[in-house]
Image (cartoon, rainbow, N blue to C red; front, top):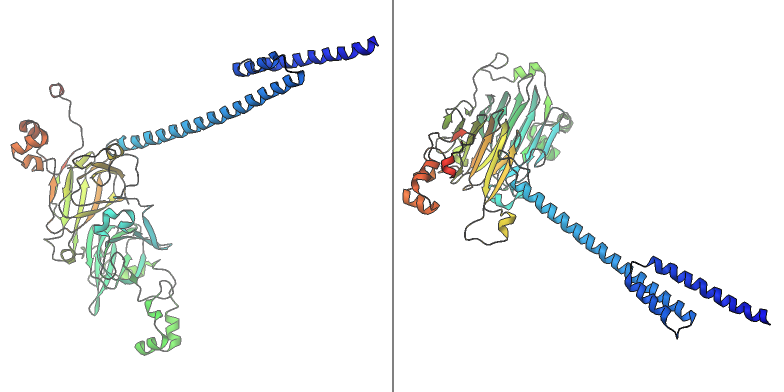
Length: 502
């Protein structure tokens, strides 16, 4: 009997001992959490609780603590994510600000600006063969609605390898052709015969809409590069080229007519016509023999390799310059001096050659929109644009326009546009000259206004206007803006004057 009574008591005491040891272990795990420790202490101190009640109470404390810990973990993760995204946003803003501020000699990492066109991004290949290609600049308004004033203008670049033939075609657009580089023969059908022109680098021809023409690269080693500015006469902003003499590639537009029409018009049987329009499949640019190149020479120039004088309308590289000094040269041809198609189209063609380590003046055009193509050398460009407001200025309204600087490194093949009234400056690298050809649209009555050099705007103002505009003595303003050179200067920083800084 004694044994039977002592055993349950012993088992009870052992169970209580293990429970207390278990609770002690749990308590050591949660020493760091005072709230959980207090909860469990209160469970154990309840005299009315049975051991089962105490265990249930302890489990409730653990469950509460677990849920609380999980919730705190979720909140921490959310806070961490928010802080991370905020840091990323701040880093993006910092990086963006650095891009805007970082400039060395005018160059900075580019954002998507409306006036800058890259050779590899903004040109589409219209025709391409093994021997050459024709690339078309995207419509200006695809870049930005700010360029709506020139949305009717299109530009193509023709590249042809040595001894190649660019197949005959005509355009539903007036064309201003400029020979960037290379030596060519251009033939066009004028009235009842073909007139041929010998083209050298720098030559320009204005070609009326609808004029059939072909081109031959007559050089044995050098590629031919032509810029063709198109002014469509049918559909604004779009032009089409039509191949008359041709076959399957390029496809002659004659083959689109019905066979009965062609037989009646050409007085030839259908079989002969089918053979004619299926023969050519070499593409719009293909290689021809040295002999055939020589046969394409104008009749008046029979010697090889056509070393006679250019027969183009004019050569922009050799004409007397409008401005010239040892830091650069600007040559302009167009209204009102030209009596050619340039006058009718109201387009001026210009060539700028900035000597290494030099710059143009800060200036703007009164009427003309400048479409500029870099043809040689490297340099930099800065344009002031009030249409694009910087981040720092966009948050605050101002009584005057907020001007933003558009900067770009310039290299051959790059094109940029400067709208009228927008001040800009270009300057060359330290190691090579910068050469640019420009088509200036709406050139009639255009004037160039400068802000540095001889006869600049500020120097031409009366002294009182200067003082009121700058809130500074006119004598000091004159000293800053006056200089002897015109239009082109050395790109060098002035020596620091301690007295001026004091």
